[in-house]
Length: 285
Ligand code: HSE
Image 1: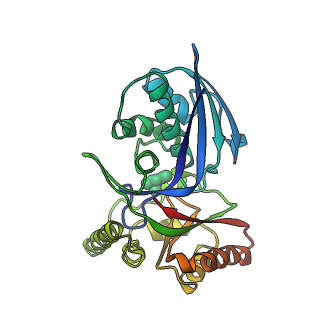
Image 2 (image 1 turned 60 degrees about the horizontal axis):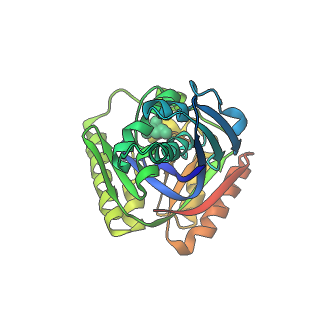
């Protein structure tokens, strides 16, 4: 039996909708695979009761199909589904690495990005790769139609997950079709600032560069308590706050020395809104 761990991820980072993604130190999914005539899937761990084990309906089944690599696949979920931390992508990425090795397919991590993204299409209706890319490659990734760029950034973050859920399909439904030139110019500037920050491991530049006036405001409306949680994190020292992926997770970038206070402030703010939450004090990388 072959075992692979793949990390949670946060996509978008505000200004990089469907383009930016980061790997997080914790949580992570662990996938174990063994050759078999037909693919079967068993799932344990966080939110496993909500994930279909039918290979036709599971991201990992799509990956096994794409690699023509049938197997008994055991998924131990550390990344809760529908939380905004790339849960399905972590399983897909781990399965892609594991099955590629199990069947000696010889694909590189970069070549596995579109394979793992096949699984994402099952969940969200589109094969976007902004979660699977960082889960496979680590650090900060930039995904475009022409390929993936990667930077080995390392920056402290707090990822706070409320007990509520938002489906990626619903969160994509509120994304506006058009934007003003002014908002596009601002967003390009912020995305560029964030990218420079990643190359310098600079939480100030990354935090500032997460500002986004196009997609994020529409999505925060779907997250009960978001405004209070963002304000509390900023008050406690966060250099920037945004929705993690499609939500409802909230991501705060910070200096290491402020991490504990920010985690406490975010959990307290959700609590004041009547929502239980869990904060991961972790890092991009
Ligand atoms: N970029 C995608 C979105 C990621 O925000 O809809 C979803 O996990």
